[in-house]
Length: 118
Image (cartoon, rainbow, N blue to C red; front, top):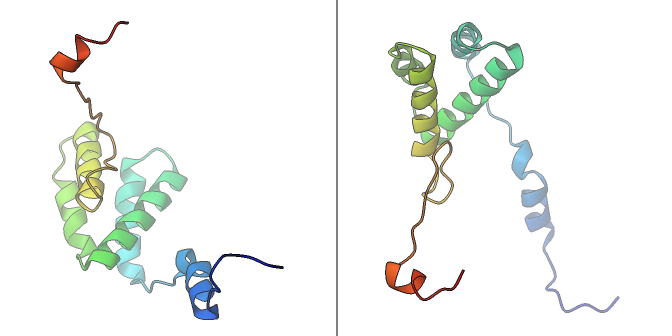
């Protein structure tokens, strides 16, 4: 079949096919401590598992000690403070265009807006 697409090498296909299946080795004691923290602070086991997995992956990829992160989360006085700390932690490792939990209101230039007929 004739195509104008460049030939992809096998190594490129293997890299992208396995991109989301990368294995990460975690300490089970650390995982259990983080899981028990989230199990005590969430209503469901699936939420605790997802939060534990996310924290472990983010700390592993960024070279952060996960137990230090949980120590900071322990300082939260209530559930709303814990949510703010979680959002702040997740956002600290994200790009500026994909922040979680915050509404970014953009306001147009007043001189341009006055010329637009609604």
